[in-house]
Length: 358
Image 1: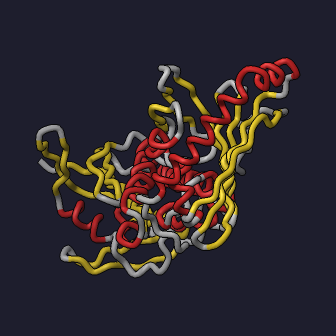
Image 2: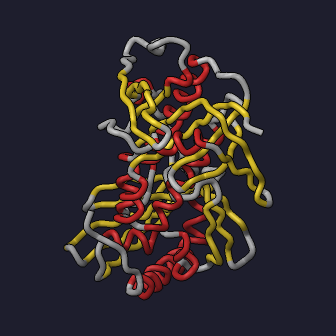
Image 3: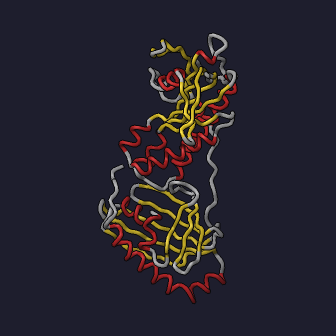
């Protein structure tokens, strides 16, 4: 038995080029974050049929929805998508091609009303019908830009859709399909990016801190290679003395403000928050414990294309008594451990191979 309903497809444009020309692992994680964000931005009771690589097939059986309600949903997803990308671009630690180019990903939304049925394959609900095919065919069209909302005539009660914002300007076009020519209207959504709320700065470190230790070492390695070795959590237990493992548990990919769980050989577990700044010749990142008592700064400085200096600075919260106790009872042992860590790192970076042309 056929049913009528809405087909709603947000599609991340640039996905194929993004995956084939950049680091596969990070591009996969970026797309995974974005797809989950789009699913979580569902505010109109859309049902999820399936994730189709770079797109999501939503549906909702029932009467034709109001266009204004649809626009509200499109606006929510589009704004959430780009706010996330802007935040990641300003906060990301990684300088690989996938992470650097993520900001260029775009989003378009196809909406169509028609007849389709559903069937189950184990735990999955699949959709079947000519209008499902039509909706997918509309993903490929002659619209030049890739930041738009497309509405087929099946969703309109008049010849032209209403404009819900001053900047909106509807265009019309059509696409020849096996079912005949499908007429549609579309509007560019780029203006919404100019209306995104500003990113809020976060105080991640002690407001007042005192430097207790500095250790430094030069390495025969590119600054990006050194960054992956020193900053990558998957390498940390291999070189930093006393560390058993480090796990990042608030995001898929490392960024400013992320939290990581550091398990020491002693069994102690410390939660740290990260900060970061990047310049091609100088990369600086820090890790501060959640109580903001201790901060470790990692400063990478480019000497030549194949030589880098790493400096580690240890800070504690500014406190006369605390500083005295550290210098008297801890400084010598901690410095020895940090110096040994830098020696260990030299062996690790020899086996790290990453693209260094950005």
